Image 1: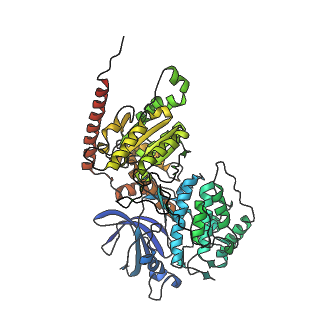
Image 2 (image 1 turned 90 degrees about the vertical axis):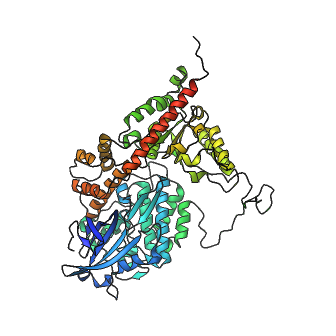
Length: 614
């Protein structure tokens, strides 16, 4: 396949920005439109070089036809953007354009053989299974589910959406015999036994998903086997895989893994496909730890009213007047990681927290001797993308505390005053597992200013927060709120004894940017990198921008199976401008001045009316 140089324009619409990977008949690039820096995946096919089996009767690329189908659209499957055809230097090409994700490959997460936390692995595999279930409903199978074909898109609330990518092996289900697509580039360890006999269907994808789940939970492949040196020798690949699978799979782990996840893996990895799950709904239920119902309908459970009637009492607004939701688990648990070592920059903030918070909580005897009370909590505010939520999690790791990440939706309730009860339950659960760091994301949405609001429910929820925040440090709790708009927070929340410390998280300076590049590229295969040049080229880039650049370069290198180079990184910087404009940055500087005035006023207010006796 001829590789287009950077700057090549297809149909006056798409500009090639960076080469990613290629085979004998297709090449993949990162591309943009002339007047838009938004990146896209661009896959170009040389029609004359393609195997005839990969073309439809109308001489269209089958992969493009599949991807362009409106029925294929799903949140866990790569999104189709455009298709087209062109002729360059007398050669006919067809091309496919799909969405380009701000995330990393699952393969990159697993590169260092580090297991993922069970809750994260569960979140990822459930998204993958939802995507596969959608394909199955269309009588399609992916046929190459593996870590390198799962993209992890990080959402603003800290959650991750897995995206199934690379539709190059997509086919109608139930292939019996020789598949029409090439098999020498399949991820051999994830292949189901029957695929080596030419049988591909939805249960083959189930098997592959089971391997991926095992890999995430245990940080290793189910079988210790390598086929990279014989990928073009199908017989040798089959022999090595078959030999390795004679060994029993070990389910020993340094960290506890829920038994229901182990049972789900065992079922998915059955050698006989008929012994696997009947359908994806059963697989999903098993991963969730729910009973597998085998197509039997689940009975609806009606909510019980306070009066004991079969139907819940209704208010004039059509809502239940019950005052409490079913008990909810807020996921308070210990996070395993490197703590502050994972944070580039913010040295003064890390030092302050080590001295004034972590030291006090870890040295209770000294705290009692010197009558030291740690602060209740802090507000991390500033421009989006600067690592506020990430810092909160790493603080919990550094301190060795339990941790819970709470979004506004986690406290939402269909019941009148239900959110107040959930706030109380959250703090009660946290106190039972102290010491705990409670991180409230977008805190301004949870405790907005009550003045001018005619919503009594909001006022009640803010009042409940005020009550719970009072001297919560004495209960072993430390609260961290994050916000892009702290000026919208009720001022009573920011008083001493509640949220004691306001911390502005600015854009990373040049030294912090250099440290971030080192951190984000650590343990990735790299050539010699000039970190000074990278830091100098990324002025006004926030943490999330730099993380994206590192992931973007890593993805291009991974697809090409080469080390990450300085060129990969600089090309990504050129193609991706800072996410925050100069005008936005000026607004945040003004907001910083305003919040510092509020903090000063609060300090002055506390001094009034107090006298220290000699």
